[in-house]
Length: 320
Length: 279
Image 1: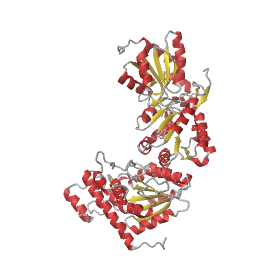
Image 2: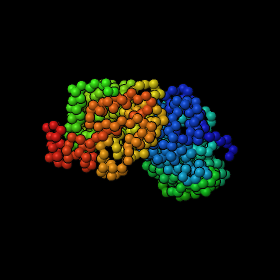
Image 3: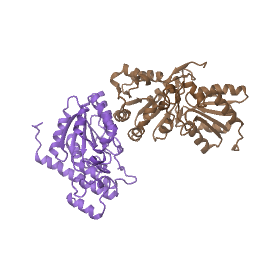
Image 4: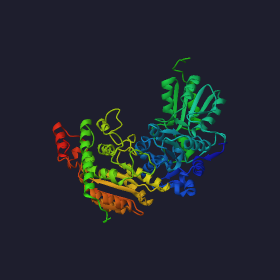
């Protein structure tokens, strides 16, 4: 890859330290993975405000609720897959109480690589986005990660799920980029079809768009980091202006980005939607980047899918 | 603690309030045709002592940052909880009659929207963890309030409880006090049949906590135990309060069928009230 890559979780840990310096109310919890999630960077700087709860995620989530009920701004981290066992604690103690707890998980998706299927969560977006009061963000790179962490701390008091990864991802945003809530970012304009993605798949989509261009297909590429709430206007605009949408995500095609895009398109502006993602299957061990090819989620696969979406006959008459 | 003198008049005052809590509980679940009387009746004496004597709370200022906190982790004992709060002045008694009704603030399980309620509960096993977080916050803020958590004995079957017990020990939360309503009955039957726990005080002790065992219907013992717990130097305290499920209503006592069901008939309803001196 030509663009430089940077670790999202490293960006998270460092941003936490900046928050800790300017806000004594920030507390951070982890469940024995702080050297991996990088919350350990905060823990080293602010040992009094860092709580390692051990391999006890239920304890971590309920304690996070108690701290938030006492006026703290709480960040709680572990691997995304392990947070899922506390779905009900998150539901009852955090979301129902509507508390200022930010769940920032790392090692989501298949980019966990060698650790294999047990650690590759591909259902988490759906699980979390289904919760009332919960917002879900999938930062596309380290720049957006820092900005999102600042944003949720500075401007929000409700629960958030922020999905980070093990691998370094290509930096797509300029250094001065600031996350705007609910707004997607169009990295490349185009009128033949729109590729809507989140996470590392956006950088794949940009590479695919280059190849598509050489084949005479002009693809729009949208970074939809805000899964819930979603930028409905951008989705509808893509549907109405191109009539063809391809969604790409490092997640199940069920209940993730693609499903939500399809819901909006179905409700507001029927158009072709094809979803790329994990197709009702578990992941497996392998090098992260090999896995994308194995599961047909690599750049050539996106190019092929985009071509077939582009060639498919439109089934809907344009309304306008 | 031996020198603690509690006048008999004070004891009988709490006993009278607890009796009102029980009467309200029966009225509420009967009017709602649903709800959980058994665990409210077993907890009534403890809840009364907490809210009328031991806790530093003010119904006029329910958000006072220095207040003591209470979490009813066994959130199904909502009729008992709401009764105590209203008798203590957090909200008017009239509201109790709309318990569990649409547009009433009094949700079926304990709800944070009700004045005096610190956290919504109802799914078992979570309240102790929330209490751990509050006790940690007190330490961070250098405040000397206490956090009280009442849990049920069936609830001890939840893993979350034991995870949070470890945290209470690790962080030396001497400001955290658990009261176990040990009534021996859960929804499906006796706790010893559904999932026997060999030695609760031993289990708690092995997690590094102070343990105190009392009769949870003896008001003097409740007071002494809570006072002792409050003076703990560096360990959290776990009070095993032996109680009777459905205490005060003969046909409900020890009967799992009244864990989650109101009096089954008008006859049962009047009998319950009569036994409690409520009519």
